[in-house]
Image: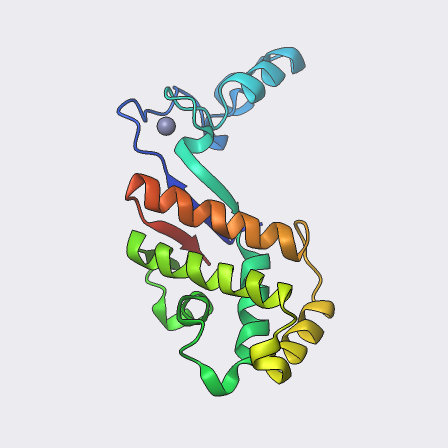
Length: 175
Ligand SMILES: [Zn+2]
């Protein structure tokens, strides 16, 4: 599906289990593998690390929905582009190097504040910026969220920020 947002864990034993990737699928490694053996590999080895974090990540999710919120903010708050600085950054392709954007833990703090601001605006129905908020709500109503909904996406974003703040590792966003 592409477009992953993730924060690596910082466990001392962040070591991939042997044969834990797709190209090490037992079907390609050995000629004879039973469906049972393959299922066992899929459940017990694929994507697993010694430390127990799936894919060696504290948190990961499909960032496409977060980008949809970024586009809605950009449209609604076009006259105030500084307001959601990090949201604007994640949809600015020129910020990506080699199809990846790293947000520092400091930027994760800012993104967290921006998400909390959206949650707060939702509570007060955009009382302080009513016109912009109406545009934003309309944009969101016309958005199809592929992996959940608006609130889940904000929560995923918060989890991502908190993982970065806690570990000191950057948020990695992939195009
Ligand atoms: Zn770990």
